[in-house]
Image 1 (cartoon, rainbow, N blue to C red):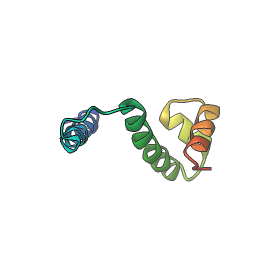
Image 2: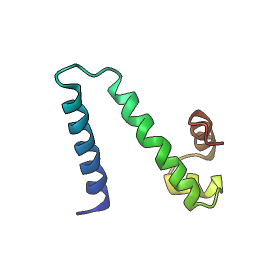
Image 3: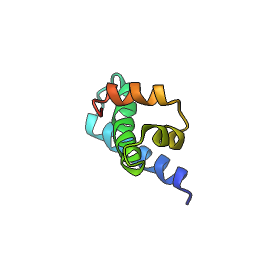
Image 4: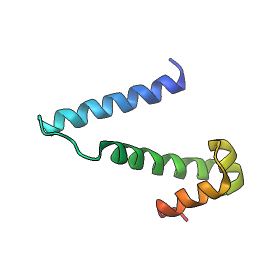
Length: 78
C-alpha cells in the first residue's frame, strides 16, 4: 500500500466512524471540519520536520511561503 493510499484509507475509516457516531443525523460543514482537522496537524508536523524553517516547509508542502504563513496564522501555529 502506498502512503497516499494509507492516508486516504485513514480518512475513509475516520469518516465512516464519524457517520456511525452521528447515528443517522445529517452532518453539517463536513468539508470545513475535515480540512481543518487534517490541515493543522499536517502543518505542525511539516514545520517540525523543516526545523521551523518556513521556506523549507513551503517547498515540502508544494505551496507558496506566503500561503504557508497565512495557514500557520489561521491555525495559530505562529
